[in-house]
Length: 77
Image 1 (cartoon, rainbow, N blue to C red):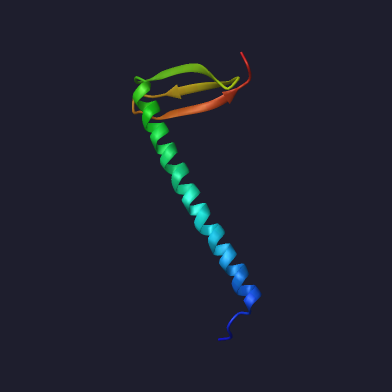
Image 2: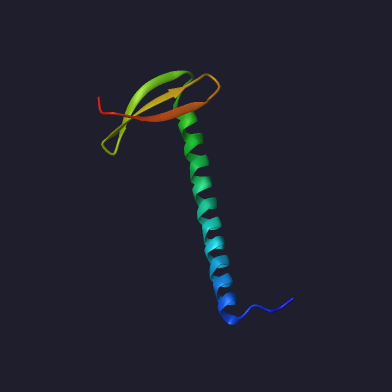
């Protein structure tokens, strides 16, 4: 097996670095999403359907008794 040239090794190193940074960002985002979902489940008591406004946008929030929920952007009221 031939050893890759220096340009190829540098390109691979850069790609691996980008991959590792993406994994870190993904893990942080995944943890934040898990915390946000858990917090939302605590705040919503059972089955519900209501509209919230966040940053000048409106969202329809629907939940059931099992703690499942859906957040859907809607046109303004």
